[in-house]
Length: 149
Image (tube, rainbow, N blue to C red; front, side, top):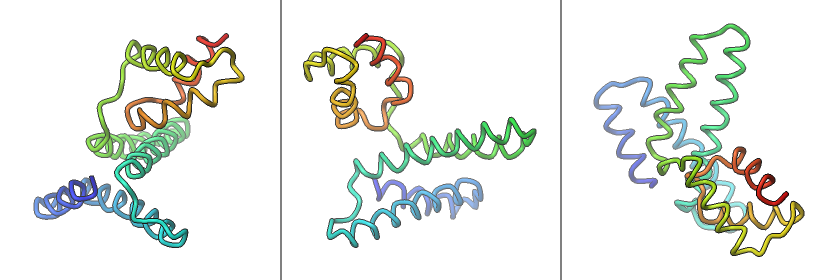
């Protein structure tokens, strides 16, 4: 994953694609921050799973920023954030649609033996372990509550 992003950064620099270059540099910086944090905690460099978590977090941050810019009447900044989201998503696994999400949640509920909303944490942990980057956990949370109610 790390190599793919580094290679894409080099290609973007050669093509003089400023927007793509800056977004990929930002991704690399976030990964390096995680590497430094891991080193301080005595862990190895960020794994592919951690990189997926970082990318998911970056997308979420940009979605929130774009929404705030739109509410503030700054359409050009919102468009820039959305362009960055598109670039970041290229490195994330394909997102699940609602039917796939419901199937994954049903499987998680069955596997964890969840019986009520109190068991929601178990289900979320199961999903995060297996579907990081593929699932919108904000939407999944509502669906889990619906299934466990």
